[in-house]
Image 1 (cartoon, rainbow, N blue to C red):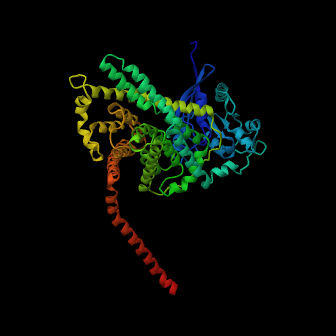
Image 2: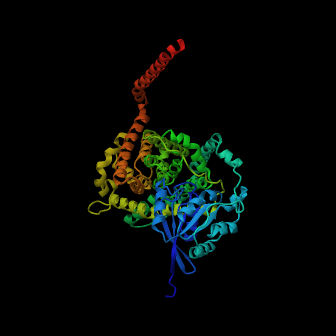
Image 3: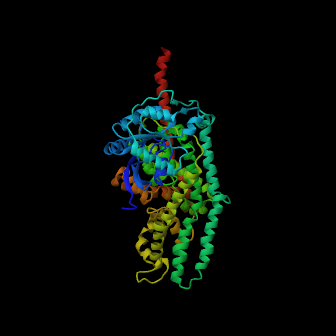
Length: 597
């Protein structure tokens, strides 16, 4: 039939972690598979169709493999998938510098099937003094070997389609000097600096402070852009809405849509800046060096340096961060990281913090830094509480590079599009339902919020936050709405109050609850996929209850309870000091006979 696309074959993208498989997958298929500089980015087999010259072929991106022994869950998934799809064409993706080490794996995986080799990062390899002769490599291996660097997407698809149709079986797995010369192994000056803890760790914290200042400090870029969007919704559009003659329609547009959606959407520039900073650190290779440097400290609390990637991903999205934990080889560490992640403040909590911060800090920069730091402290405390011995740390160091503008722009566009889609669907639906229930009584008469259906449904919840000075069902409703999506909390506060009407102590205690409570439904679902439904739901319940208790404790301390707390801690401190002295005396007693002898 004319115009029908003929199915060609399935192409499996296989290779070591960080070799460039996901980048190649996106180029071939136009997909948005997550690309990153750490093991575990591709957490499952991802398939899409690529079309070339009227013919289609399926491209499957598989997780990185070091060995067919399949040490990790990802490697087992890849090896099993390759063995089940024995008729598929295997395209082995390899970084030029790693070719001698990767060739035996290539030979093992491709035995008895058609295959080809795609080399990546060739220019960087040559800048480091390496040399590779592709023509000689083709003759030696007996299969097609090409460099993907510099190819346009159409040319790349055509090349892969030709290789899939005419590919052969590998004939050799050793490299003579005539076709491969390794690069210099000495570290560059930049690498020496970024693997030096005395330089790299202070640099990391300085960069974080700069990003927070740029994003949250009054009068700086993030705050200015937020104010522009806020003014557009609360003044310009709301001004037009006041001219609507019908009070019901006016309330629907002004309160149900503009105030609530505007209260969340105005934080888009600050979320953009945070995502941009995270992406630049990922793509430059800085985060892989940070993982190397923090492994020693992380191992002391039962984690590994590789966990730093998932924890930093948590600043963007908890659900996505939970999925990246599949890259952790040890299931015990994966479980501990998943339990730590809810305390890392994701971008969805940011609108809530900024809404509350005006009540307890004049400068939102200090408020956000304090809350983010408190979240990191709680996360590491949870890891210490669950501490077990950490396995040996093994990871490829990503090369230092200037991040691709096109890739960063595409990734930012994808992340912000997801945020806007979520805002325009789940969050908007919640706002409209909240407005409807809080604006009408059971006779469906337009009324005030205290006579509404929502008041009757949720009035019994007011006791939840009574211990923190807020005997108010609307606060409880706003807090629990965060279990659907954390952005709902800021929108609900704007809908009911136009801000936050309670004291600084109550505001900070409420912020602590939002920080420590269960993550949103998406994150719970991601956790259920990794730990099981029962464990995920139980964790969510325990986190929410413990967050309530933590908020009560915070309010107690901020309301003058420090003196009582010190009195309660004093006996514990005295016992600790006495035990320490007793231990020292026992050691001296054991040493004395030896000294006399």
